[in-house]
Length: 263
Image 1 (cartoon, rainbow, N blue to C red):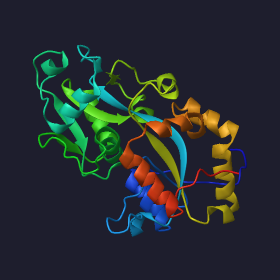
Image 2 (tube, rainbow, N blue to C red; image 1 turned 30 degrees about the vertical axis):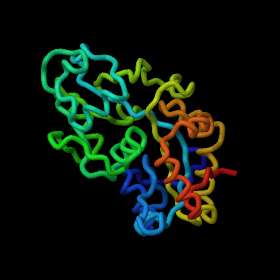
Image 3 (cartoon, rainbow, N blue to C red; image 1 turned 90 degrees about the horizontal axis):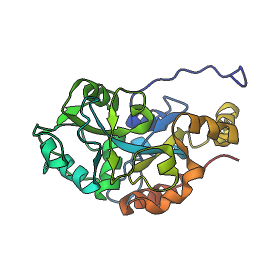
Image 4 (spheres, rainbow, N blue to C red; image 1 turned 90 degrees about the vertical axis):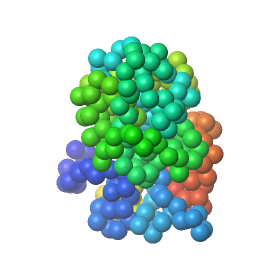
């Protein structure tokens, strides 16, 4: 809109596609809600996700979502959330609700944006096993859509997308998921949202200008209006992330992949 000279095609596909399409040169820019996967041998990003620059743009609350008719439970503890995800808690009565089964929805595998970050931030362990009885879906969108239809549903997703759905978002440890509670450091569960660019993006005039705009005051205001806390306005949250999350950031930063971007 500002330049009139940069037509683009915007497509979905998840964090993995956002990382790998850019790394492979299939896309000029991507989005990701997780860090690159790391090799176990040398702690560097795997080849499919390593040919990039990772630019942190915002902080996104991870929220527990339930069906809008399920108003008996509005707040749970982080410990109760761990219990539901691992299958130790299976009925709503254990959370203060009616004696009905909890239908847990999770993402397939352990490398999805929500799944991996949730394991890092809540369990400090990317290999944590979730309940074997959970219903597995292929995308966060599919999970959110299922929660809209299932009165007994329970799932975790990002607030940036969940806020557009007809779902309840539960408080965690008594704190409601809002941009204000996140900005004040009170809401306990969150992740970084990244812009993924080629390693030499600064050599491309259009890409360089796009990144600069995203980090400008105007760009940050747009991010805020979309319900996401701009990265630099929540930089202190870095002190609250899990040890595993910090280690992953340090690993890709050492490799030259992670940068705060902008001029």
